[in-house]
Length: 223
Length: 230
Image (cartoon, rainbow over all chains, first blue to last red; front, top):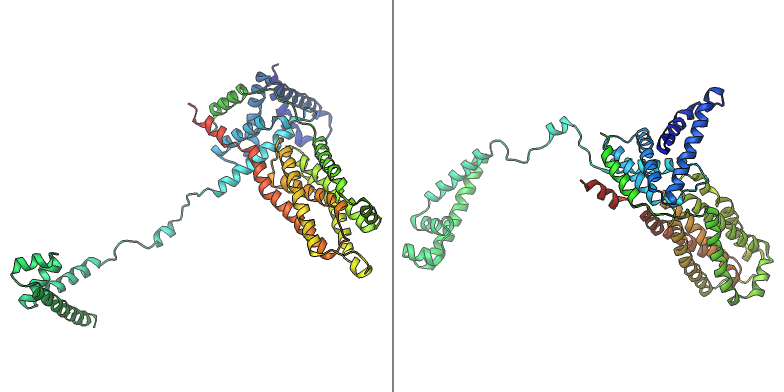
């Protein structure tokens, strides 16, 4: 039986024998296997501390199912279990000097795996999760325009066009060139043959007239 | 879904990078080594102290027991810190420093009644108390660095707890080292100054030492390396 097989069989015995720790004759073979498996794991770790890569490789492979089972029993799910296994293997590697060969290996491994499982659970609880909440979707306010917005917009535009059409010709000309076509005073003066001063005066008078007519029409519509 | 290939890659990677390593000594031995360093510092500082005044003060029961409490707290907290830095050791070790801590703080508190019970006591002035505070913080700094460095060599899975226990060990050791240099008897203000210094040392150790110790179990880079391998 290889080291890995011995360790594996012993480890399974350790896990299975624990609940029936009553000292009955029936548990004796499992217990002796457990202690031999524990001894094998301990020996493998000791060999790893001495630089035996083959023993170390076998030991780490044997640790994978133990750590997975432990992570699962702690409530870690899905790919989180693989993450716990990876983190635990890395911690074993980093902390291998802290293992005392005179002591059992499994409590040392379990302490590391337990810690990494808790880390994974904490990390998982901090990660934002997608939730299904149809009522929130139904009651969420729409950022887009309200119904009837286009109609109001069209009415407003029509009122402006009518107000401009009712202006005297000089003022209408000034508004069209300067405000609607966005020409400069020089360009509007050249185009209409009027002086810049006359255009300015007409423009301000037109604004005043529009303000008056639009505000009166708005009040009328509000009533 | 389990990913055995990913684990296999990591196992291969770790086995390939394996180098022989000497197992760390037991927590008791490492605590003993740190306490020896504290004793060494005490021996170096001893010629600067007033031995006659120290002997006179140690003749007073509450001062003597307060000093004993500080020494025992330091030893117990150091032992507990080293125990907590090894995976698989019981967390109950963290309770070990509590009885000597109670003795230390309790007897120091009794000293506060000194001004009332013994009016002729040599009470502290503000300048002297400032000196005590600076001494406590100054001595705690190198002891903290040494202790955290030693703890880092193991694998503290609860870095905050380990660092806080280490901070208590350091603060108590600094208080014990202060005894030969303490120029006055204990008072409430004196105790408060000591307590503030102890809390600062424990707090800073817990905060920064914890982060420093956390670095020993930081696994991200290697995990990423294995994840990205084809």
